Structures are given as C-alpha cells and as structure tokens.
Length: 299
Image (cartoon, rainbow, N blue to C red; front, side):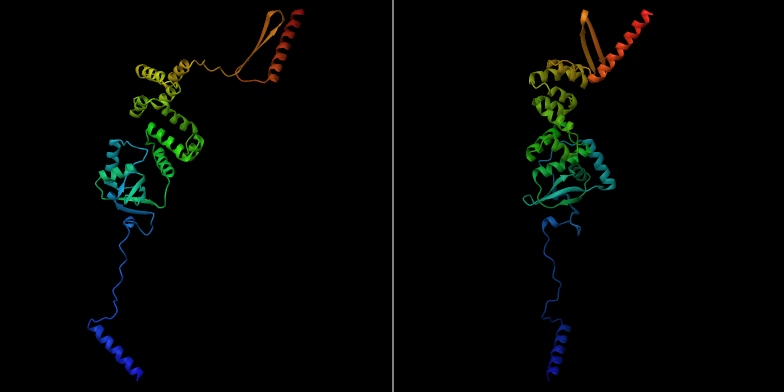
C-alpha cells in the first residue's frame, strides 16, 4: 500500500510539473550586487580595467606640473596602440574612488585620448602617508619626471614623516646620499629664488652652490650675477668660496721645510702625501748625492 501511495504522489508531482506547477523554486540564485570597488576587477584581483571616471589623482602627489607636449605625444600613442603599462591605484572608501599611487601622467593621457576605461594594478590594504610618498617618489625618480623643487619638498616631507636621516632616505629611494643633500639644500634659498629654480631660470646645481652662502641678501646678489654674467657651476662655486672668505683649497701633496745651520733651508716637496720614513729615505739619498759630488771634487 505504501509503495502504491508513493507512486501516486510521484505521478501527481510529475503531472503538476508538466503543467508548470512547482512547489520549490528551482531558478538559479543570482549573486549579490558587487561592491563598487569590485567593478572591473578580474579573478586575479590585483589587476583589472575600470571606468576612468572612477579614478582620481592623489592630491598629495609630489608632482604638480605636467609637460603639455609630452602629454599630447603619450595621448596619441595610447589612442593608436593602447595602454602598455597599467597604473597603480588604491581604494578610498571616503571618496568611493580609486586614487592614483603611480601613473597620473598615463591617466591624464588616457583621458585625453578619449578612452573610457583604464588598466590598473590594485593595491589593497592601508598605506601610510610615508609609504605612499615613497612609492610615488620612486616612480617619478625612475622616470626623471620631478622638478628639483618638487623633489626637495617631497624629500623633506619623507624625512619628517619617517624620522629618517638623509642616509636612510637615500637607501630607501636607491639614490646617492649626495643627491639627497644637494636637493634639500635648495630649500635653504629664499622663496623668490626657489621660484626661479622651479621655473628653470636658475639651474638647480648652480642654485645649490648659492644656497651655501646662508645669507639671503648674498644669495640674491650672487643669483643676479649668475643670471647677468652666465656663471658656470664651477665659477659660482668659486664665487661662493670668495664671499664666505674661505681660501682656495690647499693643493694635495707634501711640502716640508727644515732649517739648517748657516741660514740654509732644506725643502722636501712631493705631489702626494708621504710618510716621515719616506722623507728620511729621500734625505739620505740626497746626502749621498752631495757626498759623491764632494768626493769627485776632491779627486
């Protein structure tokens, strides 16, 4: 009896299903609407293509100026050949946008080319201001895109944020320590001279030498002389040394004087630094030469 009842129930179910009647909803369950920051991301979540309007520049990016001609050339290339290299972005929950870490020039050129999407590398996790600035600086330094004053201000901010020494900053950015100190030296100039460096009217290397003077009045006067007379970096360096009252550096080498009886002065000179032992050897040799001359004269 049980088996007959089961067969009848199964037959009734099949009949209802054939008529379109279902007691269970068999439609596939759709996934929820994705989070805004997941739109455009692929299964490999650190890369993808997103709406270009969902990407914005970082307001704290150290680079603030972009060459229009270079942007136009890059825009033409992207329009013709596409985007070769993705930009790096981070998500800002407050803004609901992707903020550029590196690649603002490519983003600007892509927009100028009229493209609606842009390839990105997505950087997840929180980044400190120091970490962001370091990444942006490295990107710009590798491309030699930053102007001298932009570099100087970014270097100073990194030193402050991370409480680094100049050596630590140089190691982090993989640049010589001398570059760090020369660039930071530009911040010792008054604002009007910094503006000249910014505009390219005063070469950065020359400006660095001028900054050594310390006194703003002297700095301005020498900068004016550089502009009027067209002094080279080396000439500027000598002018700074003169204005600071420093004598020219002593030539390398050895110069020793020895007073002898009868008002005779014996001088030992060499183009390099020598030890007392080497001086003794030289004097003994000279003495032998003199004795040989005396012996020859007697004969």
